[in-house]
Length: 133
Image (cartoon, rainbow, N blue to C red; front, side, top):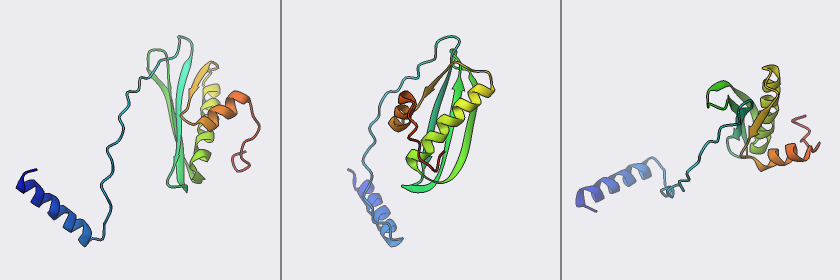
């Protein structure tokens, strides 16, 4: 590291300490290649996700509907208020199914990164949290 870079880094650290930020730099993220797979002709694919700030914080959910040529057919984004992260995922699935039905898309491929939602839907479980029912 050159002397100028070391001085600049030290200067930045001093400024951060002055405003009382004493964290450590985050590790570099793991970069993974992700390939979006289109649905078969006649299907509509909906990628959904839900998120919440911290363990119980303001959350929301959304989804994007695409056809076999990757054209966006619709989307939604909904604020949910105070929720746990996993509680934000299930409304996304429910809204996606309802919106698909309302638009006449009766053959859908619902994709979620939440194993909880995938398990509930695949097992046809009725163990949905009371707050979400």
